[in-house]
Amino acid sequence: MQAKATSKVRTASQSHGCKTCTDNKHSELQNSNISIIASISFQYSQHYTSKHPPTAAYNLQMKSSKEVSSSQIGRKQQISGRTNLPPSPPRLPLIGNLHQLGAFLHQSLAALSRLHGPVMLLHLGNVPTLVVSSPDAASDVLRHQDVVCAGRPAITPAKILLDGDIAFGPYGEYWRQLRKICSVHLLSSKRVQSYRRAREEEVAAMAAAIAARASTTINLSEIIYSFTNDLICRVVSGKFKRAEGRSRVFAELIHQNSELLVAVYLGDYFPWLGWVDGLLGYVTRARKIRKRWEELLDQVVKEHADRSSSNIDGHDEKEEEKDFVDVLMSLQDKNEFVLEPGNLKSLLIDIFGGGTDTTYITLGWAMVELVRNPLVMQKLQEEVRRIANRKSLVKEEDLHQMTYLLAVIKEVLRLHPPLPLLLPRETLNDCMIQGYSIPKKTVILVNAWAIGRDPKHWDAPEEFRPERFLDGTVDFNGTDFRYMPFGSGRRVCPGLQFAIASLELALANLVHQFDWELPAGMEKEEFHTREAPGLVAEREGKLHLVAKPWSDCSKE
Ligand code: HEM
Image (tube, rainbow, N blue to C red; front, side, top):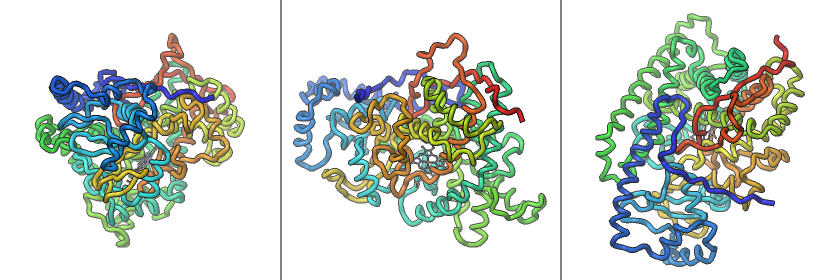
């Protein structure tokens, strides 16, 4: 029997538990602009509704999604069908549909899509935005119209923080070059494999940090964050990772970047309000952060250049664990790819950002779901402990036999894709999606979160059941549009293999070496799966747990 999908739209006032900020600045920044939009929206809606009593269509939209029949949606489609544009919820002057969105964007969009259909056109301020919430529509966007939908909207924080990068950069020849650098040189299977020792050592360091505080309540979020951050620092600029405080500085800058990138800049939705962003200091703050990145990365690049010219520490040129800066510099030396210094730094910043938060968020959710589902935890521990055979550390060579481990990771990414709306796309030309005309320069959001929880495509979608992936027919490589935590098509995540290799090894060791319990006095019900507001689907609050070392694990 299939369970019904439940909508969990909540308000912006709910608390936020960001991984590194202790003062809730993250949520302040996100919510301050959201509240400006909300208050503008509210004033307009008051003014508008007093002059224009709600129409039948508007009232219809306010009803619960379950009450709306397909014939009602059909009628709305007929109305919008005059222009062959997709159906849209009624909108207000100037702000369009912004007032209908909450702080949990993917959740509000899922609720709206249940009313208006899986291909829905919104107007976010000045920006026409297509929201896609079915596998068929996603396949149109990401497969059939992949080239036309391969643009990214130019958003203010990305222009300042990441000018010339790959993730937010426009589609074109320069992007293709960056993409080739990533897929052939930085994130290829061979290169990912070459970081095996780095992964094993960083996972061992994480396990040691947990063991040092065994049987007490620990903040596992912090430990997991340090692991993902240390690993990415080592891979990108390895030999200097232990230099005093550098990892911490990177962590702080990555965190600041994520804050600024997910914040709503009014100027992006209302060009005439761009000055407000200036007034609120967001633009200045973004420029300051970019300057700090520049200084730090200039230093890193200079140190690499000095080292390779003098070879003072006997550093050889073997491919084995060559870090990203080494790889990029040798490509420049061979004239294979010559990047402007600013663009090279933007690419590195992308890797730091792309590789840290997503993996950290996924690992955190995995532990939440496992602790909430003791039978799954037990089954996973049995598999990992049987295959690792009492070794102190699970090694990479053990992983390929751990089929349940992979199924658990897939299930975590189905329920909790860290980028629930992928990264926004933008149409480069007019195109057709599911028979609707989509104009050039329309932003596209693919709601991977909603599709992954759609009862039409998943049995009991709200339940955590890794078994559904055991037959191996559904993969996350972007070929099955019911399930695409890494996106699909030309702009699919190039870090997939890197991410899965780190996730598998880290999770296997967390469950192999320790048994996990809730802190004394905490009820299972309190150990929630609520999300923090924002564009990334992070769990609300830190993850506090007690780790008990597994006694049968070898102490060697
Ligand atoms: C659990 C881990 C991860 C998840 C779920 C994830 C997810 C995604 C998604 C959904 C996209 C957008 C795809 C699209 O537009 O279709 C993306 C893009 C990207 N990701 Fe990841 N990612 C993860 C880890 C990583 C890692 C480890 C790296 C690098 C080390 C990375 C680097 C990137 C880059 C550079 C892009 C931009 C690609 C482009 O625009 O061409 N990601 N990722």
